[in-house]
Image (cartoon, rainbow, N blue to C red):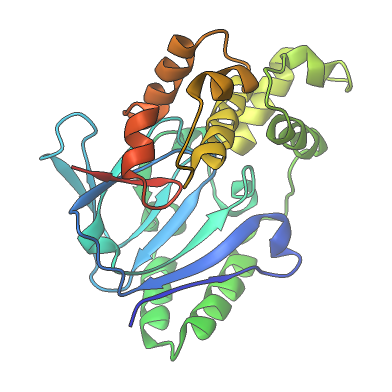
Length: 271
């Protein structure tokens, strides 16, 4: 039986977490796939075996092995994953900036990288995985993760400017200048960028570009007929070549290749 279940936690975790998710029995016809960036952080625990493989973007035969519980930092480029090690997994998809209160590092240290969870949370991770393996159902797993995350939260919250800035960046399809944010607050551009990187993990410019890329994916996902020039102009590109270059920088493929090979919005088979 194939299962993919999600759980939206109530407050206080709803301020930081988009969803808890559980996947089991998803059989993929391809061995590898690209995971496209969305500017957020993902926690993944492999329940099938205590290993996760991530492949080199350029030479797809080379991979790095991690223990079965990892944190995927905020990315501004794609990741190549091994689909076989993802058939029975549970995880947490944080909101942009939402992981900051739970980890003992500035989030920019996790940019475009993966780490074993034990490097951040120590021996607690092994006990957490064992409890998840013993859980009677995905609902119990979500409860275990929820209580664990509450205990791990530091006595801190996001800077108020981060909440304001994220809302601005996520709602605009057109380029925003740093001054569009800082003119509304009593912070210098440099101070604002430092805070944003510390809590979100990307620079404001990187984050906005990733959000525009995500808006494009939402516009073309599962759409049969697409006018690429209209998409490019609607998203603020000055020509189609600029649009294609930007798309490839995030995904490694052309927009037309994404359209013909897409599975899920942010997962594309690697053939």
